[in-house]
Image 1 (spheres, helix red, strand yellow):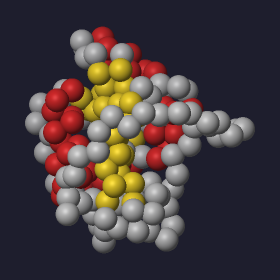
Image 2: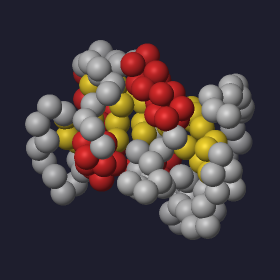
Image 3: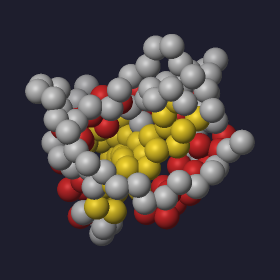
Image 4: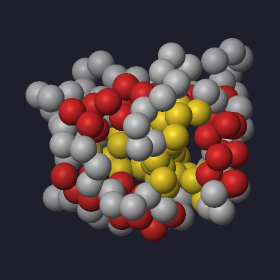
Amino acid sequence: MKTILWATLTANGNYAQSSPEHPPKEEALGDFATQAKAVGNFIVGRRTFEGMQASGGNPFGEVDIVVVSQSVKDIPGVKVAGSPQEALNYLQEKGHTTALLSGGADLHNAFLGQGLVDEVIFNVAPVMEGKGLNLLLDTGDYQYQDVQLLDCPRVAQ
C-alpha cells in the first residue's frame, strides 16, 4: 500500500501547529479535503481528530477515517487503530491501495520512523512560527533520506 504523508509547513520550515487562535489556512484545508476524497481515506492522530470535531465535524464526505490512538479504543463513526501498521492493514483490508496520513507530528514521526511513508505532500503556509515541531526520520541516531520533488503548485496567495 502506498502511504502519502500530508503536512503543512511554515515559511520558516517548522511543522505548522494550529490552534483556535491560529487555525489552518482555508487553502490548505481545501487541498487536504481534495487529497482525502481522491484516495477515499485518511489516517489521523487522536488529538488532531478531536480538534477537527471541535471545529465543525467532517467536511470530507464519505471517506474512511482511521484514528491512531493507544489511549482511546472506540470513537463512534471511525476506526480506531492502536498502531500505524494496524491503520494501514485496516485500509488495505477495505480495498484501498493508497493511504493519506495527516495530523499530528507524533503520528507522522511514528510512520516515518517505521519506514511506512512513500510520498510526502507539503503545503507551505505564508506564516512564520517562533516555536515549532519537526518531522523526524528517527528518534535515535541521525538519518538522511533523499527525496524527489514531484510538483510545486500554488494553492494560496
